[in-house]
Image (cartoon, rainbow, N blue to C red; front, side, top):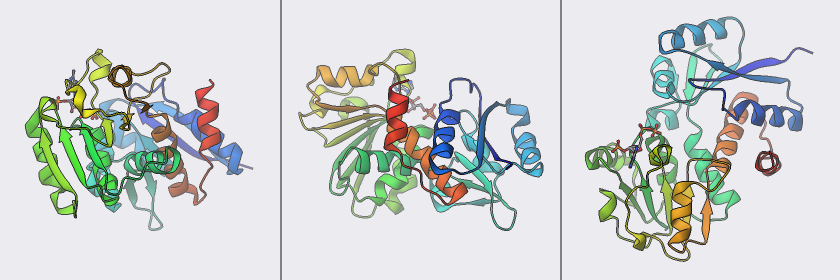
Length: 275
Ligand code: ATR
């Protein structure tokens, strides 16, 4: 039997765990999926994607730095992709139109609520960062009706712009922006969506944002405890998690979008943790 072809595209891409995750999903579900990683350059993103679809490829995941480009080239966007302003999932819809979806936010929410057992409804949330990663998750977080969502960023105007962009979707949630130093806690949930740890930096939030019951979630994933989670534990946080669960859940949602079959995620997380 021939397999349907999928890939994750980005630059760099060799570190990506997506091929491993999707091959575990394929074995688990018996779906005839073959999934590889393709490194693209800025100049050939659109032509390569269009040409692979023309050659029968079924779908792509898109990662840094092409998520905005993926959103731009799409002829149709799902509501969640529209809000996110970026896409991580591409496919052709039933009319053959290039369609962009974004499964990052639902992946984060599913990990927090289903895997970690934290109820977002009514919670006080602090999210650090105001770049593409944060923008991608705000819609699904607001859909769960937290009591408060504070966006703190080094460049405050970028956090304020996100508040402006999402104020119509905030419902009963108090949505606000501030600088790191102004974040006033403790919060029930803190999500680090900055890329500060790539430079070994910490966002300078006051330790008082963390209480003993605060759930601390770093959207970054690494084999050892992330810089931010190490800092949070030093401040007394007892519940710290990295972004592996989000990574697997966004992949599962993409798999579902493409195949109509929902893989079991806990066994896949277990395998990845032990590799
Ligand atoms: P991504 O797609 O990962 O979100 P991005 O759009 O470049 O990447 O956004 C990076 C985020 O991390 C931004 O919120 C950035 O803050 P600024 O908006 O002030 O640039 C934040 N960030 C990056 N390096 C940081 C550092 N050393 N300290 C604090 N925040 C940092």
